[in-house]
Length: 182
Image 1: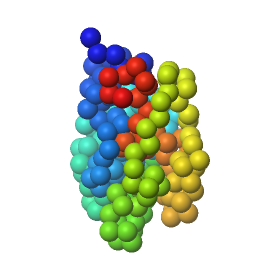
Image 2: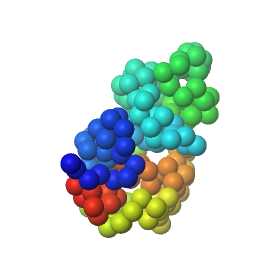
Image 3: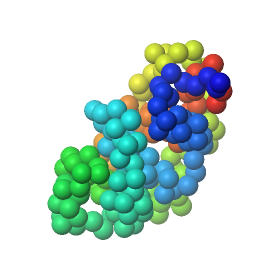
């Protein structure tokens, strides 16, 4: 039997843990997906978001930032009525705004991947935490990322959200030392 990080307890979380969390991601559309999902998670559990992930994919044009950037107030109203996602106006409007800002970064840097991985010098940070309670909620790097994103008019990108994003896309490997995925 595989030993996993303590948070990976049910089938959905186990699948996510084993196949995505902490694995370096360099595809801009996937990076956009995690940026939106991590923002949607604010104040909620990750399991809540994972259960709605397919709904988010449908609702947000498979996380195509160009399409999402063109969403209108009518789209917002439709999304607010969609039970397959978190129906929070601020989070929905944030996703649309962040799509616009995401495109600006792609234009400036050539890709969001080049921009965001620069925060870790394009090398995954491998931590060696023994237990879940040792993991930080944020770090100086996530604080720097958060500040830069906010300076670029992104929303729902506080230091804790940025750190969760970094974990999700493998900028940091926070699998505990006893985990098979370490």
